[in-house]
Image 1: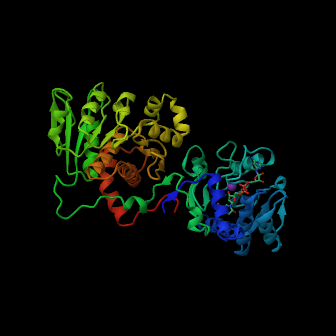
Image 2: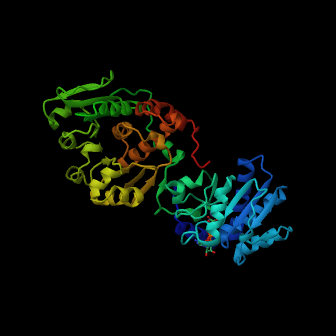
Image 3: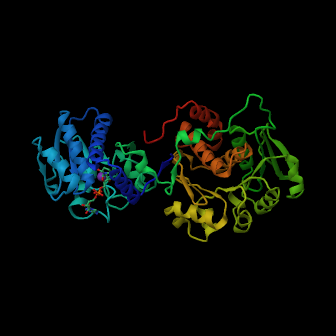
Length: 480
Ligand SMILES: NC(=O)C1=CN([C@@H]2O[C@H](COP(=O)(O)OP(=O)(O)OC[C@H]3O[C@@H](n4cnc5c(N)ncnc54)[C@H](O)[C@@H]3O)[C@@H](O)[C@H]2O)[C@H](O)CC1
Ligand SMILES: [K+]
């Protein structure tokens, strides 16, 4: 079963399924609290004094469990919470108090002497922005400058105010706030703990898939020992005029570094292109499908280069009937609309998605999953909506990438990605597989060289070592 990205509701359903399977919910809370206590010990090994702020719900319950274990391990512990817990949370509170640990009112919070704060005010049960004493506690914890370990979610996200955590222990599964900004920025380092939740309870094929190393490794095309350059995928790159003369070269480089056997670059005669020794050049008098056939390609990447010829190049390339990746200036409604039901991957950023959906870019960036789904529905193609994180859609399927970083927000990065996806299409992968693996691999390569100042060609150069790492099981997801 693949990993899924949960909403609060979906996690509540998983909880209920676990209970229906006979799994006592108090066991989940016990595992959750203990995981939080362990995170404190592992991430702040020098701390001896831990203050816990807890709410009325199960998030607070997890906090009481964490406090009990930390107390039993010899930490100095102070616990602040309102009265009025019920169910498991009330039990967890009693179990803590049985050790003689007093729970003081939140209003009495005194952070003097604390070395780490555990934030267990609210988790997935948040229904409205924090206010009153909760908002005050969040503000005081933030202002204290003390390290914060958040239980499940930093309290208050996705609204403001919220706690800013150094470590967030995600319980049972990752939720949207752990992946999407601005909430993600409040999480700090994210560690996922399974809390013993039975796999069957977590099954939720309707939720977006999270791209994991295991799932992506399985998609990597094999390289047979008797491979030759015509047998592992030939890619045609069509684009590169006017301003971005390096763009097609970056796409070609991305395709080669992703394993393409041969890359042909078609371009209008007379356009000066950046040299790339291994690329076959195909100068054209005009964008005509007949001329493009000379490349004998199995997939085509169109649109890098941002010139007025983009749509024209795209039309000619699409006439070849090959699997295709469309980017940038090829992403105009008339061109994309002609691709319905064909093996085509489009790779818009929010601005291009806005053009295709006739919406505002801010709206797209604020609701990327919904936008990707809308694009897939409207155009009947595979969608890669670039962003932090990149989200993908095809038909009813959604996926969210888990690699890459803001360091990759630089020119030419998308051209490399187009080349990678085109190489995977040429190697015979279905568009959904090529898009998911391409996005994941591209991000992984970025992570391996990742620091601000990263250049697109450096990411292309890191693709082979990222592949090796993926194959040899040396890749850990960010939540481990
Ligand atoms: N499967 C799991 O992931 C498990 C998670 N656990 C933990 O349970 C919480 C969710 O618990 P729940 O009781 O549903 O909600 P919360 O504790 O997050 O919050 C409910 C609590 O807070 C009050 N509230 C809501 N909004 C506000 C607000 N803005 N200001 C003040 N108070 C607010 C609400 O009225 C309730 O009293 C999950 O995050 C995990 O930490 C389980 O322990 C194990 C299984
Ligand atoms: K919390």
